[in-house]
Image (cartoon, rainbow, N blue to C red; front, side, top):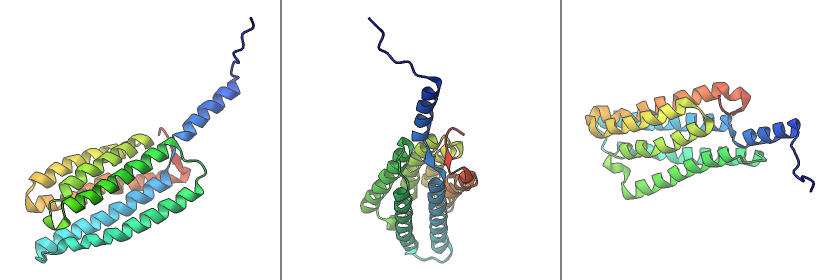
Length: 198
């Protein structure tokens, strides 16, 4: 009997490996845009809420968070526009996108169950936000995002146990470490448009 197995040529093997690598890539441009958008928006809202509550004595300072609605609209519009241009949705892109969608849905439920007026939401937001940040860091193989996730979890403890002043600054600090620094690093690398294993 003749062996019917077909051996792969070197070129075919290289093509298979290249396709597998391509399927795990995620757009750096999209990742950096969202990190910077949300980093600046949440940094501004959390710091403004803290300052208005602490120094202006405004009891309704939580209302600054309504600005997030605009962020959701911009984020979805940008993601939708980028998604229409992509011909292939890679495994990495799917994991990246759906981990953040799951976070957003969990956040909406959190705000229904635990309204912003209570003032103690930041601990839970930081706990939850660390999860998609870690997943994204793993998908991109990007250590600053993974370290940002660890910082989110550490700062969740600070937000819970730190007292009024320290707790109020946990969220803005987390945004700098977990979103803005990685976002700017990714944007700098964005000239390559994709990142994988760097």
